[in-house]
Length: 450
Image (cartoon, rainbow, N blue to C red):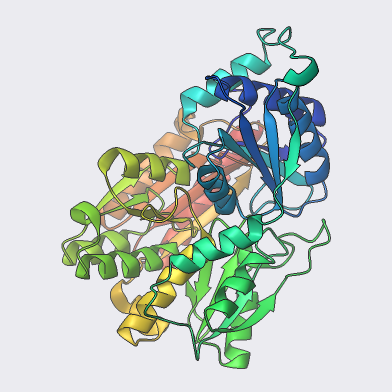
């Protein structure tokens, strides 16, 4: 069992263990030790979103890293995929992101990229934990000229904007496109509007005034209805809702209908296959993806490989199998030909490119798949553990799965980032599966609160 790292780094309430300055400094020391493995001046990138607590954690991490004789490159507020890009392009040894993604502002988190821009595997995170909770590196304290320094990278935003624009086909522009863009008062508040405007679009930018406390508040990918409504009001071609660290995006078509990650994956997989750019004719998705995605792509000769929930596991499977497209229903989409992690702005550019090439509206493109009704309930719990270890819960799940047969499925799992149990039921009858989901959630509440 790991003590700190979940499915997407470390996360919790800021200034409460483990998201304290003391822990951040120790984490900085541990990361610096892990990546200081050859004779040269080492560098680690640190970036963050717009949360108030980002300042204290940034300084604590930098102090820990410098205390191990490693230099720090501070890029300030920048999307998570932007930090992965900067880390790789500047040939740094590692990159650290200070963000709790879609969580409210009082939370914060820390996730780490290796020098090639990929998130760390489980075994390396476990090694960092061991260093933090042992005294193995306490006595290692460089002195004099061996202590690290911190530098600010003033042009990080500009570098990332250019990189994103280069992912869009050079023969296309966004001239004539009207885009409603919700940046969630988060890390993309400067980057995202600049990218779409410089490619020629008219951008109606929402939630681009971060104050440290309003990140994700009634905006962004958790509240896509804000954009859906605005799209209808102003006659936009598309709506894009980013989350706090902009590693995922949820869309609205021109009619104000929600378009999720599964539908976008279906559109992009089909487009890549048509142009013979979909490696091994395979898409990598998670077990949360809709059954309709599998059926739609099967009709088009595209295989779907499933992983456990978490974009890091999607990326690991993509790298292992030699695939170049993957993602999650939640809007984490990974185009491995361009970046090593989910990127909301880059994903939007790929969707816009399909719309331009095909000359079709997004509502027309989404007809590629028919989603099965899917109900997702989040059950708060005091102690996060696997509910399927409880006989009563397991028995109920088996009973309901038998009723659904092969035209539906159930997934019950602990959240990797919050004190929640997630219950997902999928089937052909929405009323029926809603009742089934409520039965399972009630059973979990009774048994896990006792």
